[in-house]
Length: 444
Ligand code: GLU
Image 1 (spheres, rainbow, N blue to C red):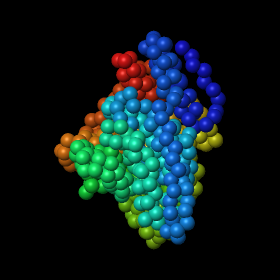
Image 2 (cartoon, protein in one colour):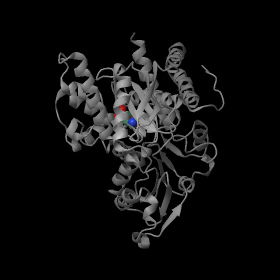
Image 3 (cartoon, rainbow, N blue to C red):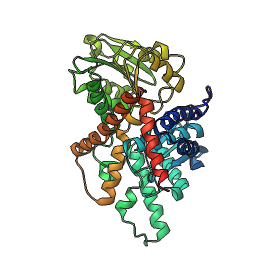
C-alpha cells in the first residue's frame, strides 16, 4: 500500500505524514491493507474539537477574552487523557497535533486511555496569581460538560502545574455538587480523578511531578545498555529547564559515572561547561533570577569554566545525548545537518520535525521518539487515577517501580521491532501504537 506523502506543510499534517509512513510499513508487515487504510482514515480526524472564549476580569478591572481549546482526539482505548498548556503559541493545529500524539503515546505504553490535549493562548508570566486562578477556573466552567473521571482527564503540561490542577479540580467538584444539589453519588475521590498532576495533599500521587524526567532517565539508561554505550561518561546537553528538563537533569546527575551534564538552557539563554554542571546549583540561580544564565554571572562559575552560549549553539554541540525538553520543532530542516549528538531523547512533544527526522536518520543519529521518551508523565497520571478511584496509596518508590515496568516493556518492544524490520525507533513506536489501535477497532 502506498498512501501518498505530501511535502511540507503545517505541524499537524507533518505528524500525519509520519503516521502515513508507519501505516505503509504496517500494511506491508501485516498484509491487511484495507484495515490499515481504514485506521488511517479514522486517525486522520480528531473526534471532537472544543474551542472556547474565556473572559478574564484583570486585577485592574479591565476585561480580556482569551482563546482556549480542548481537543478530544480518540477514545477507542479508554477515556481521553492529556495535558493543558498555557502558552502564547497555542492554536487549534498545535493542540490537535498534541492530542494525536497523546493517543499514540497511551497506545504505545499499553494504557487503557485515549488521547486529548488542551490549552489557553496566554502568557502566564503576565498574570498575577489571582488572575491565573480565575482564568483556570473559568476554563473548567467552559469545558465542564466534556470532562469527567470516565470521559476526559486533563493534566499539567507547559506552564501548568499541581497548583493549577488543584484549582481546576476544585472548580469541577464545586460545579458537580451544585448541579446534583448534594445528590451526586459519585464519591469525592472519583471526582478527584477528573484531573491528574494534583498536589499530593489534594489527591495527587507521589512522584507525578518528577515522572516525565524519571521516565526519560529510565529509557535512556536502558537504551545505552542496548547500544553498549554504558562503559564511559556520556556528555549530555539539555534544552529547556522547565519541569521535564529540571527533573531529568536531577536524575542523570545521580549517575555521575555515566553522565556529565555539559549544557543547559531555557528560553532566555544557554550555558556550557566542559567540566559539567550540578543542576541543583543552576536551579538555585534560575529560581532567584529567572534564568539558567544567571549561573554564568555568579561566583560559583570560577571552577566550572562556564561559558554563555546561544540556544542554537546548544543544539549543535558535540555531545553524546541531546535532550530537547521544551517546545515543538526546535530541530528542523535548517539545523538537522548540524546536530552532532549520537542520541536525541525527545522529552518535549514533537521537538524534531518530520523533515529533520529523515536527515538525522540518514546521518545515523538515534532519535528516541516523544511517545516513548516522555511517556513517564502520563503513566504516572494513570496511576494517580487508579489511586483516586480505589483509595489505595502508592509510595514514590513504588510509582517509579511501576513506571519502570511500563516503560521498559514499551522500549523492549520498540527496540525489537526496529531491529527486526530495520526501521527507526520512531517508526517502530508508531507502528506498535497504530497496531494496538487497529486491533481494538477490529473488535467492533
Ligand atoms: N502533558 C503530559 C504529556 O504530554 C502528561 C499528560 C497526562 O498526564 O495526561 O504527556
